[in-house]
Every structure is written in structure tokens, then in C-alpha cells.
Image (tube, rainbow, N blue to C red):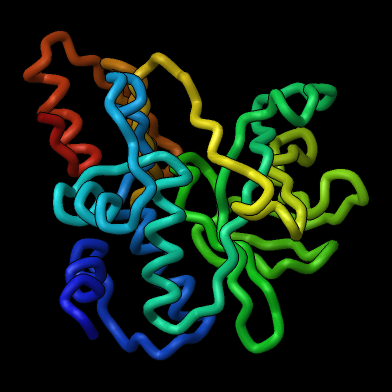
Length: 247
């Protein structure tokens, strides 16, 4: 194991065998989601973003930052390939909170990974931050995937391709969709121009979120809201709840 892989695994607090398996893939995915947040601070502060592996490694692992879905899944796909997994990066349309009749070109773009192991393909994704699967989801039409109180299902459509749905209190809601050929050859990252500062991370007991100076801590059925009033308080909360520092 080279030093960069070892540093990556130490950062996400992974321990155990690195022999490729679906169990290993799930362990890595969960560790990653609990250690590295989704955040858009570089975009909201009008800083540049690089998708090169050396720059992503420096930002996410060395500087202990988070990133958007492209940054997070591109670097995670590099780790998986280094460990011997067969990985394809796929661009998707992210449908949560988007009207069903919205043209595809106006739907926010997302990146996820498809890992093939022992003849079966799985979605693995460390780029959502909010509620989404923390374990690999078999890419099988009609398959239902449960994680605790969360339930997801996979469907396939001639127009939208693969579709991942999440169960809500009333119905099934489309989370994202993608086609088998939605690769770098056909797409380029379309970054969100969201002006608000956003951060999200999964935790062992729930998740933490940030919108500008409001922090929300979800633990089981409990929600705690915390509002910062100064730059120092904001920096301290960012470090406490997301393990990151902005300089």
C-alpha cells in the first residue's frame, strides 16, 4: 500500500482488510461519508476548483476539506481503482426538490459511481451529503434497498435510464437518474452557482447540515439548531460539526 492510499484510509478512519469485496466497498463508502463532508464553500466564495487527482487529494485529504459531488466522487473513484475495483464515473440528473416536468438540461447535475464486482453492478456515491444510501445499491430494476429507517428502490426507464427513488411519508420520490453512457465523453461538470454557503455530512447518529450561519444537528428523532453571529463562531462551528477549517 503506497503512502497516499494509507493517508487517505487513515483520514476516513478505515481499518480492516483491503481485499476487494462488496463488504469492503460498503465500509469504505460509509467511512468516507462520515469523515468528508459535502460543501460548496470554494464555489460560494468564488474560488477556483480543480478536478485533478493531486489537487483533490491535497484539498480533501491533506487540507481536510470537503467538496461537491464531482470532487468527492472523482477522488473516491481513484481510491477504489487503486484498491482493485472496476469503477465507472457516471453523470446524473439530481431530481430531489425539482419539478417532474423540468427539462433535463435544467436539472442539477450530479456525479455518482458504478462499481462492477463478481458480474453485478452497484451504485456507490459519496457526493450527496444529505439523506442518500450509505452502502452500495445493486443496479437491478425493481430492487429495494433498506438502511435503517431509509428505503430506496431502483427502476429503469427508456428515457431517463436508471432511476433511484427514496421513500417519503406519502410516496416514492425520484432522487436521481442516469444512463449507462453518461460518462465524461458526453458530459462536462456543470457546477452549481448556489450563492449560499452549504455543508452536509452523515454521522453515526444522523447528519449535520449548514446553510450560511445556521447549523442543524440531526440525531435520531432530535433536531438541534445553532445560529452563529460572528466569523469566529462560524469558523468554530464549521470545525466542530464538519471537521474542516477555511483560511
